[in-house]
Amino acid sequence: MTLPPCRTVAVTPSARLNFPRIFLRLLTSPLSPAPFPLPPSLQSLHLAPQYRASPPSPSPPENPLASFIASLKNPSPAAALSDVELLHSRAIKVGFARNRRVGAGLLNQYVKIGSLGLARKLFEEIPNRDVPAWTVLISGYSRNGRNETGLQLFHRMLDEGVPPNGFTLSSVLKCCAGISDVENGKRIHGWIVRNGIVLDVVLHNSILDMYTKCGTFKHVKRYFHMMMEKDSVSWNIMIAAHLEIGDIDGSMDLFAHSPFQDVSSWNTIVSGLVRNGFDEMALKLLDQMVRTGPRELHNRILRIGYEQDAYVTNSLIDMYCKCNQMEASSIIFNSSSLFATNSTAKTISWSTMMAGFVQSGRNEEALELFLSMQRGGVTLDQFTLTSCVTACADAGILEQGRQKTKTVLSISLCPEKLPVVDLLTEKAVTVAPLPAFSGDSKEPFALLHREVPDHALPASPRRLVQHRVLDLV
Image 1: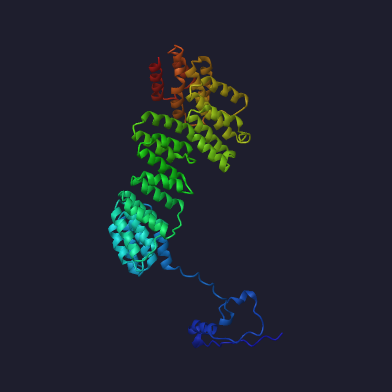
Image 2: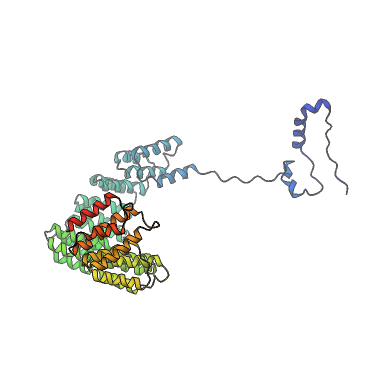
């Protein structure tokens, strides 16, 4: 094979000192295309333009305007006036202040921190203000109690030919409600109807709330029955309207027929009863709320299918126990088959049930559950044993309590369990009353000394136990 002619450079003695420069000129001078393909290992060498590998395309530069707008949409929750002013000055410095979207974002930040004076000043400087800019400022006036100013700004918005949207109308209706301006409220309601504005449930509720707070009950009742779509807010507004005029029977009837008996509706009816002097009825309803609340939460869990989660099931058992609804917790406990393969969840469920029985004063059932737990080979933990010993103490069962106390103390002294001193301080106070209830004031001290070495339970916890026993005796 005949090789192509190569370029050679004669390096004379006088040129040796300039060799690097000559070598660089050689590498960077243009060459004729090679008559044969280069091997892959040489294709990326910096020999000539036609043989150079294409550099990786750089990522497109980030749009600074888009980045700035994004920073306005995701502000710090604890943003202060100085933070917003810093953003504003930065926008002026880089030339973004005249941008409509930047102006709206800064306006929203000023309104959120309650700086309405600076917000209004910025609003007047925004060119070609769009609907969101007007809405943000009107909403800010409404939230800060400056309802007359909000109404004035809304009328100016209409005069300038800017069509409001549903959010704008909801905000201005709140302004009317805030100052009980039913005449302006009726005009805005009429404007909505004349201009064919599509009313969603939020806007419906704003109109309903405006009539309620303006004290025009006949309009409230008529409008509520006219609404095709109602949510929990609609029902709560109507319940509050009946309570406002002292119609307790009407409010209770509405509450009973409401398909949305959530926390908000319970709060509405209970607080309304208290305001009208029906304290006893409010207490009864509050007790019913406590009993109904767990069932509502349980129904939601069933609807979304979380009842198959062992930890959710344990939480339900605990919730019913704390609400003193042991029958409901027993049904869940007995019907659940989720604990067959999860020993930890199984222990937690048994311990929770035992603690619930003890708290409810049903100590015999707690002890029966403990025996069933032992027969079933369920792992015992310190919480299970504590509930068992407490049940023995409350029931005055000395011998059984003494045996359970020894079990507690033996488990407590195992080094792999919880810290000895902390655990024994807690458990010893629980187990000490056992013999005291049977009239033997010396037995707790003897039991404590027999089962717990002096080094395991220092003087301070021991004195705590002794004082507890003496108090009981």
